[in-house]
Image (cartoon, rainbow, N blue to C red):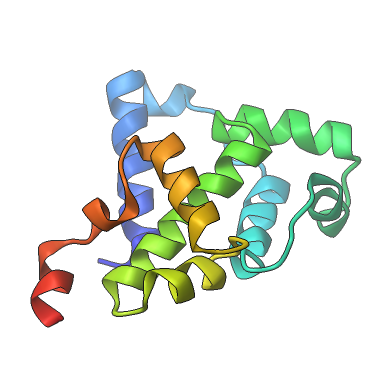
Amino acid sequence: ASDHRLAQFARAAICRVGGDPLDAPRSDPRITSALDWMCQHLAAPLRLQDVAAAVHLSPGRFRHLFVAQTGTSFRSWLLWARAERAIAGANNGMSWTDAALHAGFADAAHFTRTCRRVFGIAPSMLVFEAAVAQV
């Protein structure tokens, strides 16, 4: 399945485990739009103010809605999304440096520090066996 479809399954599972899916908060289309926009611009420097402006919200309102909808801060989501993109790039044959730059990190060292902070392990430990077999 595509990454988008897997994410939908995961969200649905979390709602089912956490309670009645009918009670789950509805997605705010402005935040959904912001997440799509952010994913398209991950390699560029992203500031909360710029994303808020892209979806026609004030920075304060955007911050509030973002946390309410995603359950995490803008900065945490951004680091997670960039780390996820860099790991996917490495698993698809890119060098760690190229994958880090493609995902919006300043350099491979910045990505490594982020990986250790976010996941508690080095990025090289996140390469799946199928990707390792291709090398």
